[in-house]
Length: 532
Figure 1 (cartoon, helix red, strand yellow):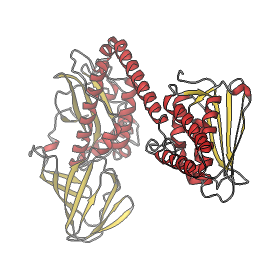
Figure 2 (cartoon, one colour):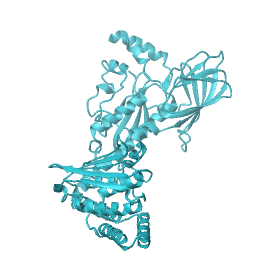
Figure 3 (cartoon, one colour):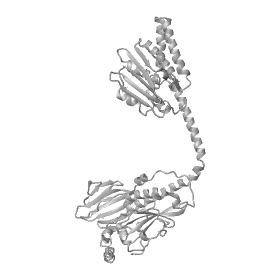
Figure 4 (cartoon, helix red, strand yellow):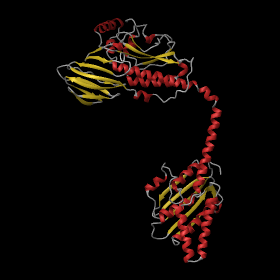
């Protein structure tokens, strides 16, 4: 095993691979103001790069000379001199030199954090606390799941250790070569006891063994090093012949015939991809600090919980009062068209038919207005609601020449039961305005009811033109219903919303009758979620 030492892998000007070379032209290690990398790539004739995942970087690829092809998520694109392509992040990519001369390209790398951001839940940084350890800051199960997701995304092992070197997670994706070789290499990090892992105060790429390297990202909290995230191992360049010969000898010495084969399976990465991995790990480090800062204020939140609950309850009561006031304002509204039409009828009757019929209509309108404008409660007795409906239908019959017939079948025991004001009137008005206006013959309304120990049942049936499926769907949509102005200004949709406010559960069904017309059925629980 070679000695562990720091290597300046970021400053390497050229990387060598089995398929060719990458010469770095623009490098953030030298140019600190940009994370973009630019490289000249020479791809040898007949060579295949092999499918690989762009886990954290996107690329622009420009072909200088030669010919070949590349694949992006199984889609083929030709590589000819003068062509350029965009390769998005988090896609599968492959390049083949199909010519007899080197394929030369310019490639730019740009780090892309989109998927890493999606892995991290949103956290607000609320405070800054010191003297806390890594174990104090993070939930171990949450952190384990997070590191496993990132490890799967980049295809590499990730470990997290605190400032004392204690491992904080169970790493996945450890190369099988490492597990095999660790059996005989007592100094391998896989064999170290708890508390003996190294922490790194700065970003570092460190050699491991057999030309392998690992990336280290420090975690600082209140300017104090509290841990390190380590990723790898990977291979930065071509496998060296010296290392392969050494491994062949180790296979014989250790009795592990597959050692070299497993070594050749270890992931090889370009410098650009290593930068992408480094930045992703930095995101994780920042997230750990954010989630830790949030957890540190839990004690303060608990000490103020009673005050917060009181404020929440007061706000809830205010919202309820505002809603009830709004409902009362709505319930007090009468359609201006209905008032104008009624007053017109009264005027015509007084002029053409005499004072008696005009007086009857006036008395009905007076009772209707008195009920709607002076009713203090959101709930009324069934008997009051029916009287209101009778006055309303009486007035409408003066407009439609006694065209509307009304039949009521409500048991006497139900008359004192309390229901939302204008609940049945809205259904009656809907039938007259939408069901009878286009009806050639006489319109008939049938209101019936029933009850048991827990529920009240109502049905309003008419013989009008019938309701459409689209209208039924619209009645139960989430769109604002307050803007409706037809009829009373409330509408069936707003009635449905009122019932949702008044009751924990109820049944509200609209349908077309087989014989024509519309049937509306309501089942209301006697127990309400708001007080009368």
